[in-house]
Amino acid sequence: MGTKITELHCKEVICVSDGRRLGFISDVEIEVPEGRVLAILVPGPCRFFGLFGRQDDFVIPWSAICRIGPDIVLVEIKPDECRVPHPKKDWFH
Image (tube, rainbow, N blue to C red):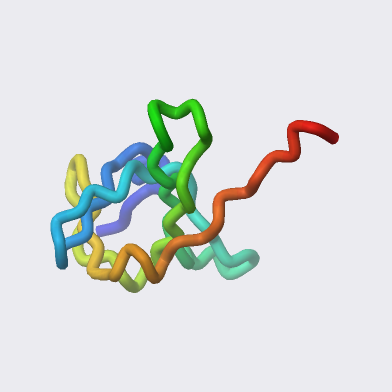
């Protein structure tokens, strides 16, 4: 049974090793033209009520997904190893 990309959007991602809630899926990385899903993207948590931007994003390889449920996605990965720096905006230029 397959899963549509639109069904993945906004599902919560939880790490099974420590139970940490990583956030909600915002995007999917796809290899073109093969159409193979490489990873799911989860924005990093907000800093101080969202006033100071976000922490680093999570890029979780598709192979790390254990189970896709109706509301959550369970992943087997060390969260600190899949962090990618959040793009910084230069507000002064």
